[in-house]
Amino acid sequence: MAYFRAEYYSKALCRDINFEVLIPNDPRGEEAAEEKPMRTLFLLHGYSGKAWNFMPADFPERYHTALVLPIAENSFYLNMPASGRAYQTMVGEELVKYVRKTFNLARTPEDTAIVGFSMGGFGALHTGLAYPETFGKIGAMSSALIVHEVAQMKPGQGTPIANYDYYLDIFGDPSKLLESDKNPETQIRNLKAAGKKIPDIYMTCGTEDFLIENNREFHRFLEAESVEHRYVEAPGIHNGEYWLEHARDIVRWMYE
Image (cartoon, rainbow, N blue to C red; front, side, top):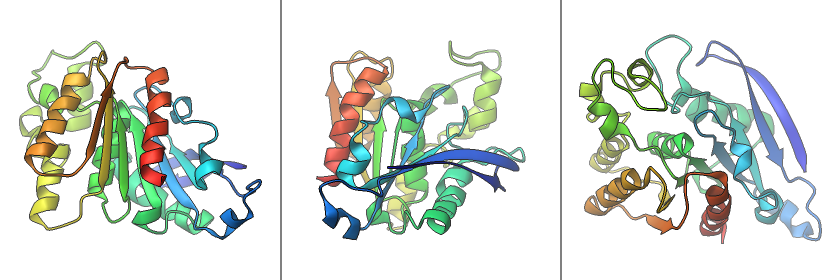
């Protein structure tokens, strides 16, 4: 297993940034695996988190898949108006191109997937829908699909997680959010209208998770729009134990 901590200059963020890569380039007991195309999975962390705390350790070698772990701070993986705040572009375009050039990975959508939890679950959905020609599969766990709550916010309001100014910076004018491309529902409608392929989607959320209703709402939206997807609920809360367990189900769905 090769581990890299890479650094490059990001034009999208106007600074040097780091990301991590795991490549299972020394398979044991499966010599034929060397002849198979290397799959690539981009792992998106949550708010104040890192992606390492939910992916099974045996996953890369078992599925001959490289893992790419960007660091996107608390950005929701979105582009913001200020210079150096284009996180969507960094992950969905810039980093993909860099990984292709440097490691010869993520060459086709069939071999490229994106998975995240919480804020990263939102990011996986939004980034995958923004770049369907890049990501063939999306895995979204306990996704922070909070656009409808943010759309109702007024100055001085907020949540226990962050204040109004944070959400304004991330999502823009709340009154325009639901019609913008920062809303995954709008992304789905736009892809359908353009006749473009929507990536395969797997969503899961714990029944005791504080985001369960948000995930149910998006599931119902996908059903109403006749978008094929897999949606799973199971007992659990918003924590790493749930994500670790259900990450296994996601990778089995993707690769088996």
